[in-house]
Image 1 (spheres, one colour):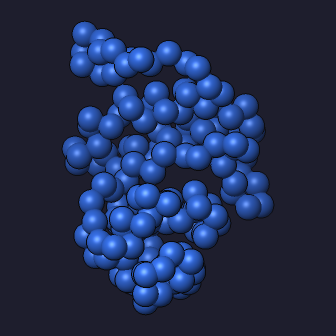
Image 2 (cartoon, helix red, strand yellow):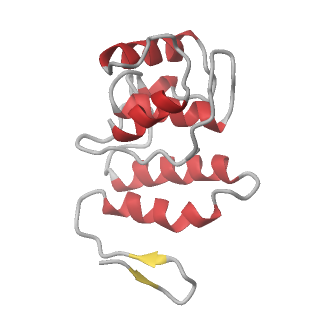
Length: 148
């Protein structure tokens, strides 16, 4: 059950192994629209994953998240068209969601819509008819990503 603390931030009880990560995300979510917040959110998420997973902070070969977890993607929450060659928080959101669904390796989540991201988007679209595997992340592809 969620309740609010005095500062208006939702408070949760820790009930699952990775609930600490979700608590961190819920705490920073109201501030993610502020300037520089996407970068801060990414750093906080990375730190939370490293600390809460019990795994060493050193990067491994495939840059995988902790077993059994599904990191929350909190870079962007819209449906603006995102295409090859773009950079930024929309691209990071697409990449994070594709990585959560195992279409993209975690080391490729870099905010740059390059050839690896393009191929992952096309594979995702091909696996989710009636999407057309054109590599464009428009409203229909966003919807499929949000609901997959």
